[in-house]
Length: 195
Image (cartoon, rainbow, N blue to C red; front, side, top):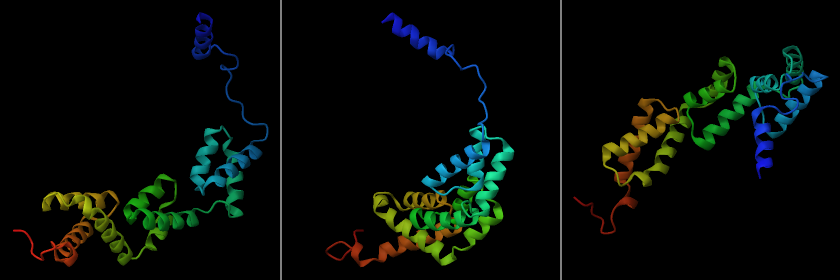
């Protein structure tokens, strides 16, 4: 038992073989960069900035990384514009995110501001409002036990976290709550509202 502890402590203390050596660049950095990029792109689309960051973490020299990334861009394996457009469609339709939140996500992935603006501009104002309305409608049932002010704050806050402007959020919440009060399906079975 004591021998087992000693071998563990030696490995943990950094006295193991080869730990003092600095990481060596690969023999063929471009081949290594191609392999890393292809492996990452197999799992999901990536931006040029994401791939550059991954190559830097793997100690690929900058010149080799730039050559590989340029070639991948040239042949269409890296396409930040297509990535941004697909991201906007997917995250807007799937999560109901508004342009502000989508822009922030794309910026974190290294997409250029002009590319982000073009991708987000494809969302029409009526689609954005419809998505906000759908989000509020889905959340209504879970907020029914709250008083009107708390319910409004919670619903507006949910929309704000998804990137909707305060004006649109308040307007949509107000309209959906007003529509809920007028919805005949929401009336009690006897047809009268409680006072």
